[in-house]
Image (cartoon, rainbow over all chains, first blue to last red; front, side):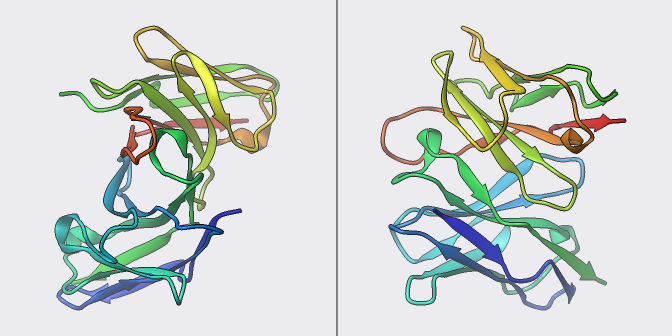
Length: 117
Length: 115
């Protein structure tokens, strides 16, 4: 069975400093991995996705993540945090041999990112 | 272009009642998935509909059922409500294209409170 573990339930950073949100995955085959962001009272938004192409994935709003098979990790980073980045972030793995409509999404428990002025 | 829409926004029910939640997919999408997000948790997959049939189902009891209409919109029904059914219910739509990934777009959700 596939699963993801988000190692921190809450991360607090100062504006302008780097962001690191950690995620480890478990999968019996090559996974499809994603990061979603959820702002209060808004729907989930896809930040970036890894689907067995380049291991360094660039997403929206300056976020990126690196797929490391040897470490079974898919950590999310951003060089400089902005106040608008404060939100809940979910690491996600797709069920099945391929993602998309046929595969349901398996979410981690989330990491709440706080950004201090 | 309207994204995924859900109704109602909020709903309060009592134990034992039945509830119906509605979802309209993003324009051009033909697949709808439903997720339950309990407070402080990540969303959990309930089921997925494509071509008006349930294609996949997560670990949820038969009290949870759904339907997809010819216009691709969908309903989620929950019977015999329990306190533990209180959650944010999310609908996601996507376009079925065979074997490669297609992004699921999420709606803002319906907040269900069971008293």
